[in-house]
Length: 200
Image (cartoon, rainbow, N blue to C red; front, side, top):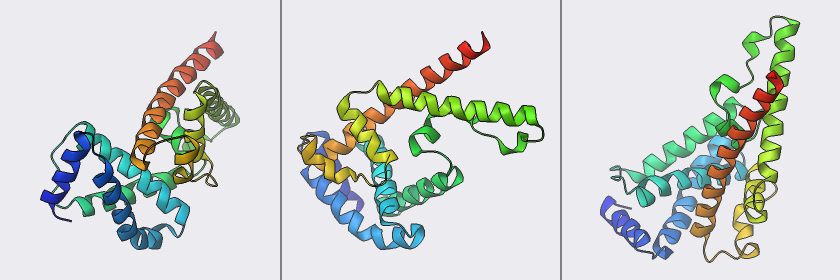
């Protein structure tokens, strides 16, 4: 698809007509799926990284109306590849937790030189997981279901469209993105509060 055609599709989405963008998503997924599958070896991972990348694409070029790159298809493939590489760097935790906790809060294997450091790292990891759990509990049932689709590989996002009464897939993806932002913000707040309480 050339840049001009995609610009028209995005313009229609901005004006409220999301059907052309939905068709673009479906066609693009079919086009990129073989390449992504050869990279991940997992159909579920392909779906997850594609959805996450298109959420970012939607935010940048539909919500924020940034200028499109010359080769949008290649750009999206690189986004998918980068998302997959990032997820593999931290396999010990979920995508949501990985994005929510800053580098200073992450488990650091290099500090495991003595027992004190090991205990401290385990406490940080436990606090992270507790913060995520409490943050999930604070969400609405609809948001909670959307977030569980990201944490639980057995739940497929596309299967939730009818269950959660969304008119189209893009509305569902946008709702998931909004819920994820709220969840990340809540995880930060709870993590910081738990850390402060532990010090006192």
